[in-house]
Length: 309
Ligand code: UT7
Image (cartoon, rainbow, N blue to C red; front, top):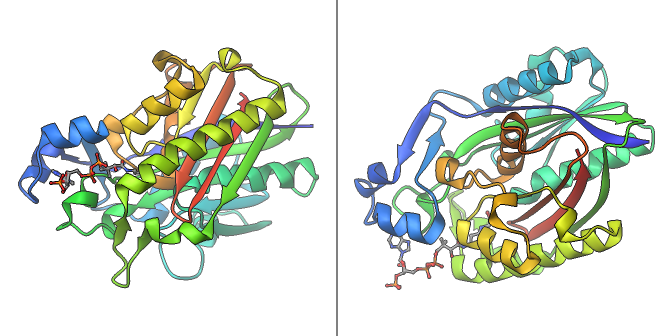
């Protein structure tokens, strides 16, 4: 049995915050942000709640999967900005969707949350404990950004991405995956007492490139797949320089690496499912293609997943 992505969906908030807008808020420049990060603009959820963004992305994913909410057994929401302390955003989403059976929960693994959720879903589907799982990566990072701290406030954005996974007999499947965490390194990226994001950027940069490369290599080796066979790499969108360094180390040309950080910034757990949906919509990812996803985030957490789409 394989784990198939039946459908994908996204929601991006309407409000756009450009680098030029940020120049008016803090001592920064479009030139600095563009050259150091690759970001030009990001979306800010002024009107939209975390649950609303999750719901819109989920409904689109269900529609693309040609399924209904009642077909879903498990709802997993990967987020570090849940709607409430409790109940989980997963339960609130379950109610909005009108799902009356199965169960829902949140998964906290920061920017690696979506890949961790895929890992859990793959286990549920392959063990026969579930037939269909809805996974959402959603963030409203604008609420936990210190808008007076130029070293972090220029980096993050809001949004949601969703996938419907199904156990199926076809060839599409999660071929290999490796998840990691190292709690000793928690203070490289965390929320402080006020709840604001704190980051040791330069340190994280180096760890990110090294760890994602290692995770990708482990996954490729486990699946006996060479980098040349990978149709598309979807990396977590934290910094275009990290993405370029990773692609170079793996020997994968830029045209086979998906980048949308210029439009959305770092949306943490939402970044990979948003990119995945766009890649499918743009025809850059077709059925049967091999896609390599990799992420690195607070925890520290990281991982890689190789999927035959
Ligand atoms: O999602 C989880 C994963 N996240 C990551 O992996 C993020 C990893 N880190 C990074 O992407 C980069 O380290 C940053 C983009 C955060 C920072 O880039 P950097 O090239 O490492 O810059 P830096 O922190 O070393 O700062 C260089 C200079 C400093 O000035 P001095 O000390 O050299 O005078 C900063 O004060 O740039 C200054 N600076 C800024 N200048 C203008 C920091 N932020 C800004 C800013 N505008 N927004």
